[in-house]
Image 1 (tube, helix red, strand yellow):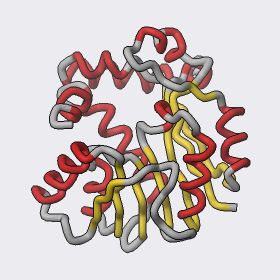
Image 2 (image 1 turned 180 degrees about the vertical axis):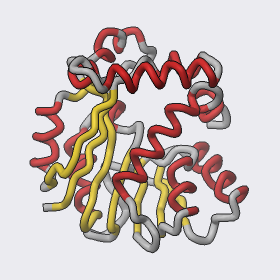
Image 3 (image 1 turned 90 degrees about the horizontal axis):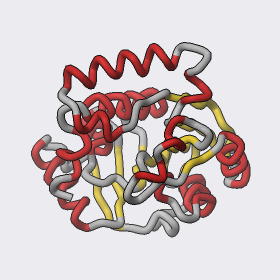
Length: 223
C-alpha cells in the first residue's frame, strides 16, 4: 500500500493517472454536492480529487492498509470533513438502495471474479449513474496479458453490454483508448511518457485505434 502510487503513478505513470482522472471527471461532472461512492478506492487518488471539487463522497476498499494511505492523503489535503472512508466488500455493499447519486470503480473489474454481482450491487445503491473501466478483449492488451504476474480479466463489448443489461443499467457512453502497456509508462521518464502519449492518441484517431484499443470507460444510467 505504501508503495502503490509510487510504483504505478510516478514519473511516466503520471500520464495514466491524468487520463484516468479526466475520464472520471468527464463521466461524473458536475460533482459538487452530489453523493458519490467509489468502490475499491485504494489510496484515495480519485476520492480525494472529487472531495476537493465539492462531492459528498465515500471511498470503500477491502484493504485496511490502502485505506490508511487514503486517509493520510485526505489529511494532507485538509479534506477529512467532506469525505468518508470505510472498509467493505464490493459484493455486499453496506448501504441502502438508491443511497448515492453515482457509484464508480476504477482499476477494479479486471480483477473481479464475479463481475455481474459487483455490478448489480453498484446499480442497487445508485439512483442515477454507474461508471467503471475495463481492459478489452480482442485488443492489443490480449497480446501480452498472459505475461503479467496476476493477469487481467478482459472484456468484450458484447460481454459488458450483457452485464449492464442484466444489472438494470443502460449504456450512455463508452470511450475506448488505444494504450501502450501501462508497465511501459511506469518504467520511463515523464518526457518519454508524454511523447508516447502523443503516439497513443494519434493511433487512437486512426481506423486502427478502435480495434486495437486496450482500455474502455463505461458510463451507464439506472433504468
